[in-house]
Image 1 (cartoon, one colour):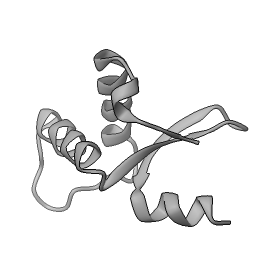
Image 2 (cartoon, helix red, strand yellow):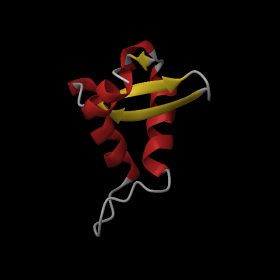
Image 3 (cartoon, rainbow, N blue to C red):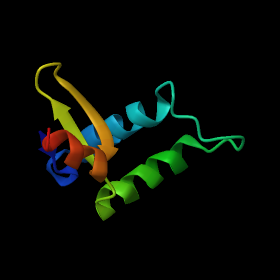
Length: 76
């Protein structure tokens, strides 16, 4: 299930994005990027539709994925 980012409270959205950008495996390369900057980048991607919030009902888990990945998952 996809959840529109504007349906979350600002606090819940920020916490979701912060969790996403601080997870293991979200390496941004050789240059260290500030947490605030990472959050702003993901917020811009959500607003532009490049990424979406996906909720897995079976696992009760939210993730931020690309629009293309969401399309592939929904078409399975």
